[in-house]
Image 1 (cartoon, rainbow, N blue to C red):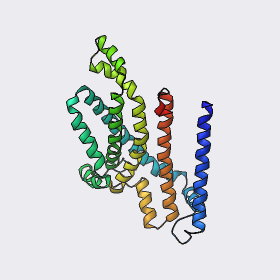
Image 2: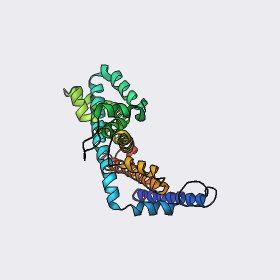
Image 3: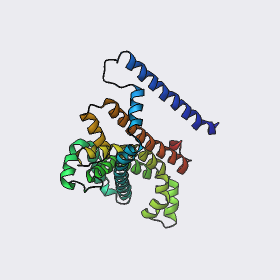
Image 4: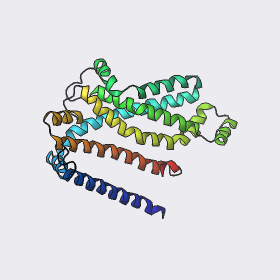
Length: 260
């Protein structure tokens, strides 16, 4: 029975998606006929008409920015979360820093970062986009990691202590393993946020390629079908990131209910 659950979930998800598309199409043909909302067929046509090179060029550069920022933000968050366990006095400072990165709107901090980082060289990634991607994942990951590290079994920690292990030994042998489900659950949310942060960074980052550039062009040309196609493409990428880390959680932490 358990082996059929993923298939059943996928089937229900596909039916739900088809239902949403059917409702969308019905609304466009009826109550929203006069609104500037394209039909599913128009969006699909606009998406196909742009060609594969369009997506590999523009989505590719944004994905690079998101991946680099995701890596920086994740490493910094996990490292600082581990430091709070080793040096509890630093926990208030780390958590305040995490809350600040979460509370400050990205659209407000983006111009400041652009002034500090400057324009990217031709063909290079936008530093502003990478920085915003890193900031987008920091809060979620640091909070999830701290909670996961604290969830370690007290008996296991005591065994390590009895055999002469200190806080560092407890961290590397018990706490990190116990934190894996929580960390992966945090990354499941953080990965799509990194992609969104990269797009926001491109809006002010002075780039010549990227998802934000294509959205700007579609807006200037009043290309409604094209804008929706790009937006749905972004949603698919974000959903793929979420699904990837959900699947990774199932494989890496099968004992965890949170990964099921």
